[in-house]
Image 1 (cartoon, rainbow, N blue to C red):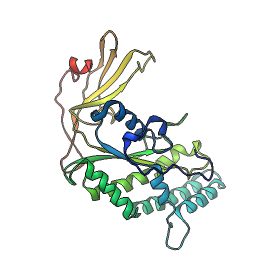
Image 2 (cartoon, rainbow, N blue to C red):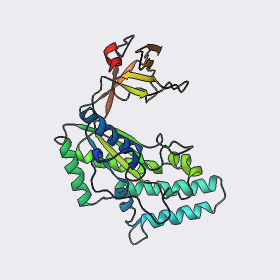
Image 3 (cartoon, helix red, strand yellow):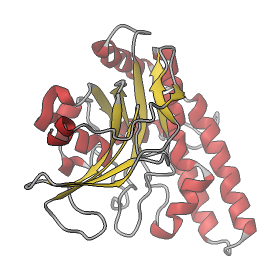
Image 4 (cartoon, one colour):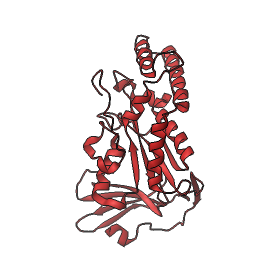
Length: 296
């Protein structure tokens, strides 16, 4: 949380290659900062993209909340101060949720301005010809992965967005997602000044993975180092959407492999050429990761 009166650093360069892990909380959240770290280490193995920093959203909050009224930032501070004076209970929740609904509606129609729209189009053009590719548009806030609190889950990822106009719409949806009732409820016990919530946005080119998943560089059950815990599914977004995944424990030195569970998900997630995702039957293979892939 920033000291009172300070705003996030405004970065004009949206290139994630310029971000490193230590930039998390300063320019973007952990997703963008760590992607920059990965891009620096692994180059083109990390799909192209860019990060829209905290400061872009913070500047929007200086616009009026309603014609002739105070800025959104001032209205947020006034409202949250008034809410803090109310006793806990349904009445306070109703007041908070009504304000959040108005705030989300404002974000859904805000015009970020011609300079922003021009820069966004330029960065998308660097990824390819408009309409010929998709991007994942991901929320990346300053209130994720904090001590005692993980706030990434409630916020939004819009998958495989195709076309500039659709990216603008998805961007507004992602900016608004930290102000849902669920997100607000998750973090309220961890914030004294709830107006200091700033979403950065990761925009990354979609990649049609045949297999995908999650790897942790330790045994997640025991904490032992020297082991890789791997969960994988066919298609994109493996092991993060509640699928029944193939689960492996791999010894990095001895190349020993333990199969903990087979992938039994009946479908796989694939990218739709027109945008969004679709579900197709999975192959039903008894083993997803081949030995050469485990070696990699």
